Image 1 (cartoon, rainbow, N blue to C red):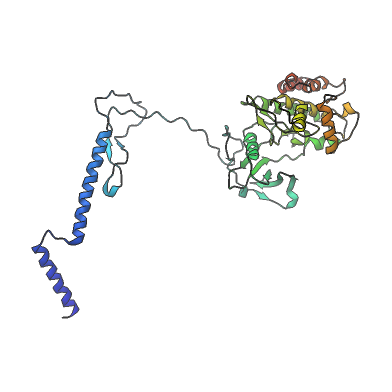
Image 2: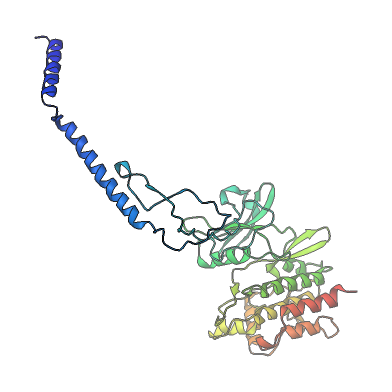
Length: 407
C-alpha cells in the first residue's frame, strides 16, 4: 500500500478508536487533565490563604487621609495564579489602614552643577556626577605636583580647568579627605568639583583650579601688598571649620596649603589639603599630623614621644598664629620664627625644621612679631603653651577684621 494511502487509513482507524473510547485521550490528554486538577488545587489553596490574611470588617476603622489616593484593590502576598505566576487581587477592606507616608527623600547631587547641593553623606563614595574619563589631561607639563602619596595634574572639563589629585592607591584616609572637603562650602575653602573613592574604581579628587599659586610662593616673592587681607580670609576659613557640626580640625595649616585665585577685586585665599583633617568628637585623640615648623608643640610631642593628647581646635589656632607671624616677616622670608631666632632662612630644610620643632616643644620659643605690629597681640594669643588657653579662630577673625580691614 502506498505511503499516502497508509497514512489516511491510519487516521481513519484512530478516529474510529476515539469515537469508541471517548475517555482515552492518550498520554497528552492525561497530562492536560492532571494540569487542570493541579491548577484548581493550587488556586483553592491560594484563595484560602488570602481569606485567612484578610482583616475582618468588625475591626475598628482607621481614618484614612483624604489626600492619599485609595486603590480599589490591593495585592496580597504571593497568591498563585495560572501556572504559579501572578497575584490574586483582593478587595481592600474598609478597616485597612494605609502605611505612613514616606519621608521626603534627600536631594540628589545633580551632575555638573555650579553650586553643590548639601548635605553630603559622611560615607559617600562618589560626588558631583564627575567621572575621571570625563576629564581631559594634557601633556606631562600639566603636572602641578608630585609626592609620595600621589600626583596632582591639571585637567579640563567642559572648558574649565581642574586640579585633579590622584593617590597611588585607594585608602580610607583619602576617602575621609574627599568626604570632608566636599561637605565644606565657603568662599575661602577650595571647591570640590567631584571625587570617586569607591572600591574597584580609580580614586581621584577634582578641585577648582587656583591660578595664582600658593601663599608660600607669595611670601617667598616680593609681592606682599595683599598679605594682610589674606590673613583675614584664612581666619574666616578656619572659623568656618571650627563651627561646623561636628567641628573639623585641619591639623596641617601652612602657607603651602593656602591656594590663591586672582580676581578683579584682588587675591582670594582658598584653604586646601584636608588629608589630615579630623572631625572633633568626645574622647578623640591627636594623631601624628602637621608639618615641621608650622605645627603646635603637642603635635611635636605626639610625633616624637608618642604622647597621648586630646584633639582640640587649639592646635589649629597655633598654626594660624604661625601663618600670621609669617605674613609679618620681611619680604623673601616664609618663617614664623624669624623674629624669635633673628634668622632669615627663607625655606628652611627639613633638618632645621625638626630642630626648631624640638625647641618649640620644650617651650623655649614660639612665633612672634615685633611689638609695634598690630598683629602682636593676636599672634601671642594664638600661641599660648596650653591649647585650652589659646584664642579661638572666631575671635582671631573678628580681631583681624577690626585691625586690618577697618580704616
